[in-house]
Image 1: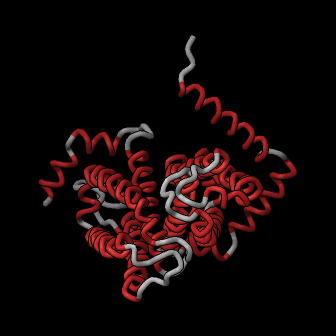
Image 2: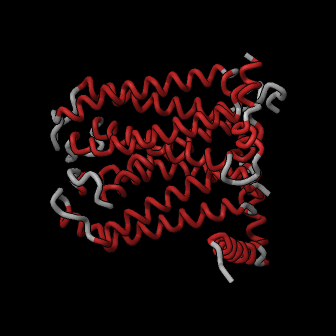
Length: 193
Length: 169
């Protein structure tokens, strides 16, 4: 008997699907979620994206721009944490992070507007579940970074010091999570219910 | 041009990209194109932001190491872009916006090369404010990349012909 990578993938995906569906079918949450979704659906933003010709493409462009800013700041910082471009003083490079948070907020806002426009297209979509999981991973990783690594930035600030293992771990997880977010995001259209 | 488009659309690669139901055909090429975009534009954003005073303390020359990631992103996108073009040649080549997008990318790359001269010269030290011409180049660079992203995204909504045989929508 052999277990292929595909079996592992299918099992994990099924597991996430089961948890997601049990949450979605939980009566209390379902009642409230339906009310929330209904409210979202009839928000001016949802209405605007559904009815206007250029609203959706414009918001998508903003979403991709936010992604590029996030990649240009957070992902570049991740590469530095991994030990690339060691001539870059890591504390000073960290000043780019607020721009990345800006990009993230643009993408949260435009993303929530997409969900408002067609909630069921996202909430019953396997790619969306993966996207949420990758964003959550990135978020927990940020917490780990600020509690465990941030105050030690000075210890590897110049180019002669290899970043400590914790820093490289944070950089690697963040890079993986954001590429995962992009991948899952791009797959959304192909997993529509 | 139709016979030329048809000959591409009838090729085995084009048919496979359009009609294969596996995730590894068209969706995978789109994923490559998106991740490549993030690295190509991302590195430009990082360098432009430093030039505009966003991360004082970083000597501009130290960022030159990131250029390899930018070019990796560029080549991934040139490759995936050609595959997307092979999949739907009529869709792209009959849309004026496609040529605008290519022009904007060309301008973005020329600006990146001009900015690179300042980066490698080492003239902008850790706490130096970038000179005026570099700041202007960086602002235009940011605008051009946002414009090329927008043009690229609009391609999906402005096409008139999907293939030689079918129209969009």
